[in-house]
Amino acid sequence: MSERFMTLFKRYRIFLLLLVVQLAVMLVFPQTGSKSLQLTWSNLGEMLSVLPPIFILLGLLDVWVKRETMIKYMGESSGIIGILLAFFIGSAAAGPLYAAFPVAAMLLKKGSKLSNVLIMLGAWSTTKIPLILFEASSLGPKFMLIRLGMDLIGIALIAYFIERILTKEEKEAIIKRAAEQEG
Image (tube, rainbow, N blue to C red):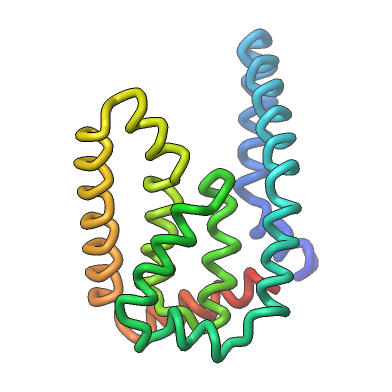
């Protein structure tokens, strides 16, 4: 087999495995397989409606925001400003969590501190502004404030400890991988 084929196979092996599983389910349990296929197409449509605007915004971020500016506000010596900015970006962002990963890759490529990127990812997943407003109106402001406070502390602690635990080589590998994903 050619090297190009093997590279493509390695890149898409999970997709191919899931395709084989889908086909097996369709053969063994046709009704379940049909429902699974419908859900897959629905999720694919949702992804295709969300990702293009995210990639357009990433392209604009790449062109408009200089690396030096990103390093100043979210880099190694950004301090509390970088943390607050990471929380704001994650909380104000629209879209599902899978849309956050290209944003995270761009932030790393531009020189953001790893812990700030982890904070942005944590905020994206748990502290969305519409979610906070919904919780306040349906579950009460006390519940919302307690959950938000615990989330903010938990996200910051997790990001801090992950950054401390990783070696310099591991951090560099993450940043290199993010730059490769970005293109």
